[in-house]
Length: 369
Image (cartoon, rainbow, N blue to C red; front, side, top):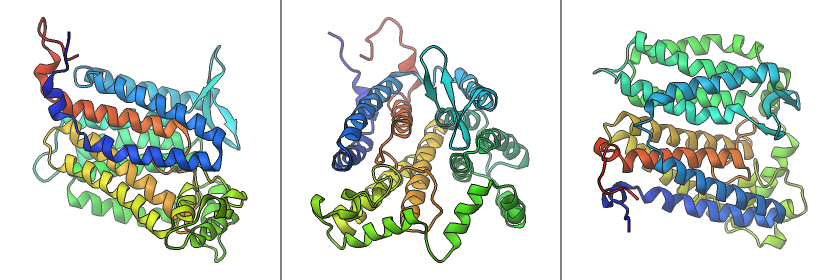
């Protein structure tokens, strides 16, 4: 009978699933309280996420690294196809319908793992010298960051585009870029802010205007009321009137944090944010203490992605950021975001567990499984 190679289990990071599982369980429970039908669909998404995690964990990422540029450019092609063949919804053209099956897909979501793998591939082929990357290497890496940013922003989907931009900049900062470059970019960004504002769509300007106004929008008002009504320890399900009486909009996805606080109060919010903090710190620790460029970039990317999503979502619900469609990572209802995170975690676990090259090239010997 074939057995699992013990060296794989020795290098598997059990801390990651130990921190993720509580998020998934609690989110499924709360979504069931808000809308039982959505809870059943969410359970399907969790099952799909578990399958893709397993698939990407056993996928030999390093051995197939030559395919990463192909995967990246394929997704760039999908983003370009959105411009010509995409379906528009609510004024945005972000989806492509697959022929014969009448199923729509959002290429910007598929771009996230391709984007992260491409950065890891480029850094592994050209590691930063002592003192960090200079202008030549920085501009080359920036091309691969800015290309999907502009294509996604044109859909328009400025939220996802900005997340990718922040992700790319954050990875380069952690990997190492000379400080003079960062100073030049910071000054250039500040000077060009008025020009950037003029290029925004009207609805994007309205979001900023609503955010800057003294009175928050209806969505944010109801969210703040729900958060305030939770008190220190929260309320029972029947007493959480903001959600149960449908005053709180999009309670199962964009504003699920408000429901968490209404149900479990300030203490519940602290515990949830603390759990995210543990995940982020753990992943950053992996990135900072490894010399493997693939592990460094992927773990840093996942950490930054969780931090940006969590920060923006929570700030949005309490009126400290404009309302954008950014989910609470692995907590909000929805399949694409959750499955994407499972893909990334599966690849990261693969890179750590199969980190030794000889494990990929054993022939005629005991199999891994």
